[in-house]
Amino acid sequence: MISFDEARARLFTMAHPLGKEPVALAKAAGRVLAEAVVARVDSPPRDVSTMDGYAVRSADLEEPPVRLRIVSEVFAGADDPGSIASGECARIFTGAPIPAHADRVVVQEVVEKDGDCAVFADAPSPGRNIRVRAGDFAAGTALLTEGTLLGPRQMVAAAAADLAEVTCWRRPRVRLLATGDELADPGSARGRPGAIPESISFGVDALVVRHGGEFCGTLRLGDDLAAMERAAGEALRQSDLVVVSGGASVGERDFAKAAFDPHGLDLLFAKVAIKPGKPVWLGKAAGKLVLGLPGNPTSALVTARLFLAPLVAGLAGRPAAPGDAWTTMVLGSPLGANGDREAFIRARRSDDGRVYPLDNQDSGAQHALAYADVLLRSPAHAQALPAGASVPGIEF
Ligand SMILES: Nc1nc2c(c(=O)[nH]1)N[C@H]1C(S)=C(S)[C@@H](COP(=O)(O)OP(=O)(O)OC[C@H]3O[C@@H](n4cnc5c(N)ncnc54)[C@H](O)[C@@H]3O)O[C@H]1N2
Ligand code: MOO
Image (cartoon, rainbow, N blue to C red):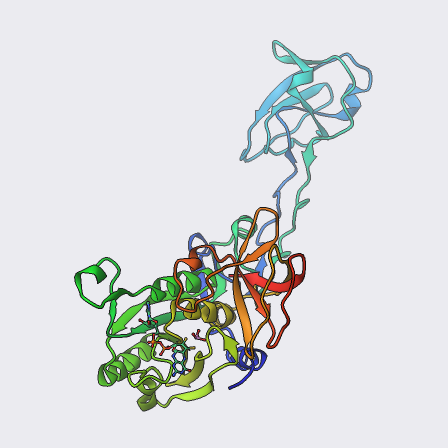
């Protein structure tokens, strides 16, 4: 049995990006850049107006009131904004290019239109109301760096660079084998005596997607070693990472590891000194990664959060461990003393900003998962802590 830190260190040696691929910009939200996004254009491409109003020469407005002849109308997207001479102005709208010789835009609210003339009663306010060419960025500027996760804000910057596609890290394809004779598809358990709904795969699917992977489906299997060996081979061919739930412990039908033996399973670890989740294991087979989660649903989700999430994130090229940094949290109620394995306590974050350990810490619990916002880390043999004490925690 190895420590949590040692198990994670071994896992991180495997958590490298899988490869690059071009991705259409419209499909790139949520993906991670494998190459920087470099602007192909200046932004804005020309000097443009920031307001609706009149483009003028400042020299003409030195002795107000002034009447200037309106010689053109310029809209955003205009090919050629023309030019103005002394005594002239141009009607202009937000985003429209500035006519030659104009050096300022006066907002229409302070201008009186009189036939084909504009009347300026007062000296204009100091702002020129012009956004200069390349004032935001120039062609050739790196707007986003390699490793950036494309969220809503980054998508705007990528599109503004005038790119139809971006180069992203390939997403790891993950398949799950859910083992256990007692398991039934949700919706069908009550029709079969002794059956329970298979729940873990649904949490793993959501977790894989959240951390940047592609969930490619679940194979539900009975505790039949030959069938599991065949399914293991199929899953290894079709994915980058195979997750197996259940059958991780020492029961007579716990076949999870054995199913991968004919495919050359090489274990990185099996059994970690944590509670819950001691039977979690990681290996390689047929050049792919295999992660075994314990069958108890809370154990499965805790180990998925602690091991699967950073593994998927690393394979997806996400920055080291997003959302994986332990932060200091303040207990709203006492935390009991700990036993001889490092413990990950399920707790609920309250509106008062404090965290409250849940009453039900059973590794088979499923209802409590609905409320367990955070995991608190409690070292082996830790003493009990009172309300108000600080503990390390992460989002669960
Ligand atoms: N003698 C020992 N017994 C056990 C040990 C041990 O060290 N010595 N370890 C215990 C620990 S810790 C855990 S955790 C469990 C994990 O066992 P398995 O990974 O072999 O899981 P199963 O036996 O297959 O299932 C456990 C439990 O979870 C239910 N289950 C399984 N898969 C699902 C699923 N996909 N969806 C919903 N529920 C699932 C299953 O019905 C069982 O009730 O072993 C302890 N035993
Ligand atoms: O340590 Mo097991 O994984 O919870 O009951």
